[in-house]
Image 1 (cartoon, rainbow, N blue to C red):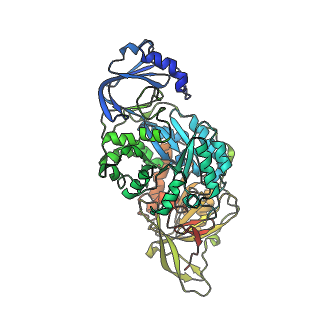
Image 2 (image 1 turned 120 degrees about the vertical axis):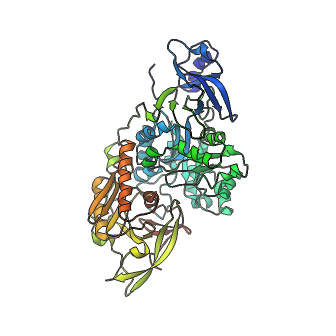
Image 3 (image 1 turned 90 degrees about the vertical axis):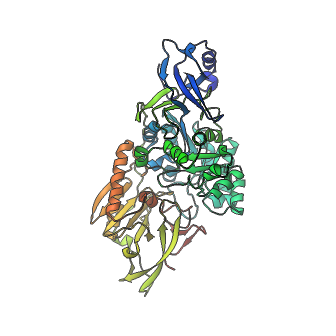
Length: 600
């Protein structure tokens, strides 16, 4: 039979589902003789068949041979586990450096059949139009990609300038689109805490549409500010890093989203709330947040998070609930997906082991989409317009002088504020360092592991460059590393030890239309072109992963020893996570949410 990516609603499919369930009609698909993993009751039931019609589960029973007709596809489960397709509760497709189509193609073989995505990266570059492009490509896919309308562009008003600003009117409009499931993470938590009318208007527009408000409370303070934030309406949070964070969130009626991404390792420290403290696991959700293409190609997606949760002591059935039914329930979709039960979308994985979770066959909406780690369906591409491919506007060719840091009049040494990178974590440390002055200029100091950082304005072509210092990468020799992926406003970040090379790197990114470029001893040694919004490639994940892998090697050749150093690089302008960041307006003290001086 012909399969389309459009799916009948449950009411539209009901007459046929009832006929199949009653045994009056043959099913489109019958999966025979498997172990039914029921996430509603947390039990494994042996020797079950599953009948599928119209892309939905019609019946689950010990013997459904009555539903096998001449046109029925039959899959032999041979005693394997039949589990729901995996669901990612919070993620950013752009972090994979891939478009929605190529991201879907990369994760389907890992068993991910539903994603709740917040395209706030493209919103910063292209505004509502960019969100619509992501939404429209997502709607073409053979799996479920729900879009959350980004809430915070800019994420910290007054501390950065984005390509576009998101308004409450934009949010209200997006709530009428078919694939919009709610509001993306409310990163401007100070705005919510202080009852900022714009933030509250966005939350109201979402709640009035009956949809879910995503949270982002990136502060360790679980007192008054946290209580104020929860009272403002965000329904979940993925910024917790310790058990106390997870417990505080679920006690207040939020869902605690625990993430394992390419650089986030926040499951192990929080899942003890369930495994040791014994709290009700139904309010805990597993997610990835940010996964780059190399992780997707080599390590997996939600299957990787699931295995990690089990390794951390979670009961496999509890871990499975955390990446299926719990997430569906949270977004008001428990009757639509997240379990193997009548009427739900027929999204299912066949696996021979619940601990290691080999993903042997993936079925989405009633058809096989991947076998033994290989995708076997098309993931259609959207026709991205030229405006989405021409987004790097430097305004001029940058020169060495743009990267000079002038010393205060008459100083021989200075005490400079330095952004300190923390391995495998989103927060940075606010450091200070004594730096020497040569010819009226302040330079980085490789002996103290201090390189120069520059934020280059790329949305409006102002030619603006803000310079500062960063520590933690371990760079040596003459080098520069630049990227137009610079959360969240996505200007251009260049880190280097040589001003001439920093200028060359920035100009190369301008010429390339965005992406990543690594320079050493006067020449580019690696690049990852990201032509769509300077954030994504429409090449396959394996191609992008190969380029990204070469980029990681190139960073190491420049002396970098940091795990996931690229992810850390791309977060240096994230002005909503403490302690200190850089923006197009200057250095930002994120503990106070105010601009600060480079020199003390």
